[in-house]
Length: 287
Image 1 (cartoon, rainbow, N blue to C red):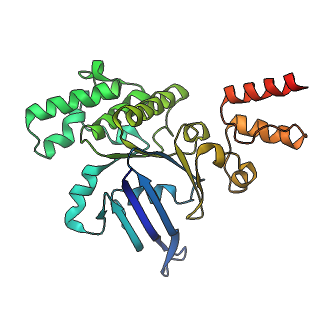
Image 2 (spheres, rainbow, N blue to C red):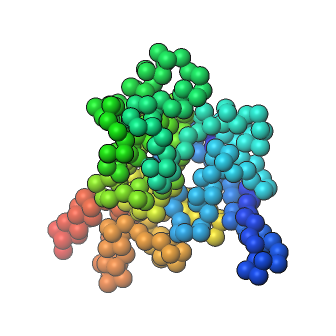
Image 3 (tube, rainbow, N blue to C red):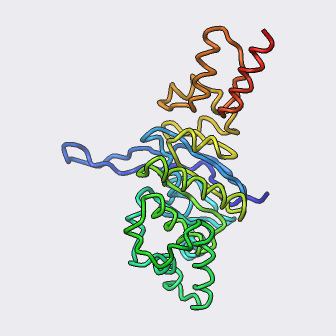
């Protein structure tokens, strides 16, 4: 697979005004972060509040530019101003609050909004809007008011608006943080399908372990640095390390960890309920 996003030792700091108002100081947020994301991958990025994960996400389509180092999107340096349009065509962003991304009073008009601003031909707009709404299973709601939909449905409309741009990659910055469990499930199922069915690269910024467990790869951040980068099974087997940086683990991983402390040895890379049931059954049968 070819790389869609590459960061090379990027650094970033916010400017902070001192409490006394006497001066400015730089507050480091990212430190020497290097990361490669390949086309077609589904990557989850984890970290507690303040770890730098959302700041990193904003570098992926040039909302932020690094203070040091380089970010490349499909081989394009994000620091090149006149390539900004090309970058944002390749990488779309979906944020936490879907209400902040809905701009029209009719669903299909909302999905078409960006395309109209880009001057896309009306016949192409119609085709892209219908395709995007079908991709997120919201086509039947195309003539509804988005503000009358549930949180999960609104977020899927926001995702459709990005899909209509036909990006190679979608970066979702905690898209389920404001949703109930049903809405969360709807959005994550949609994201997984976009990855599997359409081959869209997905970067999911989240603090929900069960969402990250469905990714192909999990990146864990702490204090502006990447401390783990591997498949979910290997990342979530590092229970003590994850807890030491303020993160939870999937409930199944927690159970396996607690059982091991009691001398009950089970594989440490179990992350699904069915894997846990099978392992416990095998253990009981062997006794």
